[in-house]
Image 1: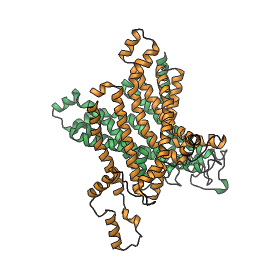
Image 2 (image 1 turned 180 degrees about the vertical axis):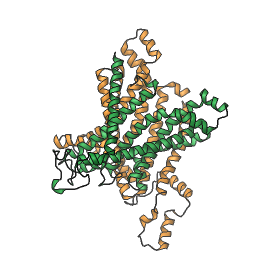
Image 3 (image 1 turned 30 degrees about the vertical axis):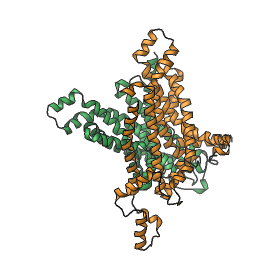
Image 4 (image 1 turned 120 degrees about the horizontal axis):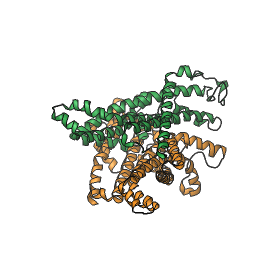
Length: 277
Length: 314
């Protein structure tokens, strides 16, 4: 009975996660239609207003509507998050497959990945941004560099375990070339863990982008991002606490949704994980 | 055991070297000439050549790297462009606050998370387990700097119990010092606690499903003894792994949390240096922090061997 309830609880959570994730995408895609105000229009007479019927989440230090800015802020998170997922998947797949499949590349590639993983992620990202200059494209590259090693490791693990299986040696015995084996057998079998990993990379990317924008190394004002909105809020903590509540809630829900979806996908795609929670 | 330690140390060497190369290239591939920092925009060409020679910038990159890395290994991280003093001195000043912050956060996280993880595994699907799940889910999704802002609002602005900003060094009294550490440690420690609780729970669940646990139960050994002696002992390694991971993520998180609390640590130093484009400081901090991470991972690996004899002889 307990386990049945557990499964139902899990399913509910997965449904909630899917809903939040889709909602964030919709918010980003249809921001101009959903926002009630122009996110960039300042109105000093209306500055630092608490939430009201006109401004659902209040206004900031320049009199801009926080609700509309938060809606537009989803665009930065979604753009950065999905770009980072696409790039880490691409590089992680390439590096992981190469390391797992070719013994002679394994040492060099994986030690390099270890070296990258030795840098705490935000420190590495911020150093890369210091070198490249802070803007959205460079945030994407910085996060790609910091997050690729984890994906590469997962792919390598899958490849190593597949390589010895009969269907792969069978394919090789039949004279299939490496590239064919990789594309027909190895890549498809890496997909399930990669999809799960993607949802977590997305969550981490969104959190990191917010952190980088918060310290001033990410999305530059006046473009609203959840992180730089919180940086503004920090300066008005004593007079306008609402400025910090809402952008933070958007981040928590966005990342929570992705993690719930990821857990659900892992349970669904990997039968061994069923019931592990 | 000695062979294991030696083998593990040898594997670390290429990683250290690659870390050095990465930190070196990061700065040296940056557009712009580091010599510009020491020169007026309209300096004569001879002056530029002289400064480049003094900084060793006229040498080929590999030579520059060997010189620089040799210095690093002897503890010389160069001088700050901005403050004109050794990076190692600036780091020595900024390092203790970050260490205190990381250690108190780690302590909070472990003390809270390990019991939560163990109990929710033993009482799987109970109300407590459900609460633990929610605690974990929210913890993993909450940005530490946002939690910091909320904590400041509640405990510093509204209640006035704790200071909102800054750090008092322990030399000036341990209680005032601790007071400045409480809020930042909670802000930083929560996500670590969530991570540790989640891994402890799944590590413990994994062990509880093993045959020898079933055998122990079948033999009629008391439930508590099965859980805490037979099972927990074998769940140590996954817990250790995640605590090691948590240290890295806490160091990483400290960068942003320090900014929220105006904390004079390494994170602040790095962020300030980024805005001043003070590359030697950025480079030096990156290296030292990577060095710490490598040492932490090494210690965790060696501890595995202590808690699990199979690794020692494997």
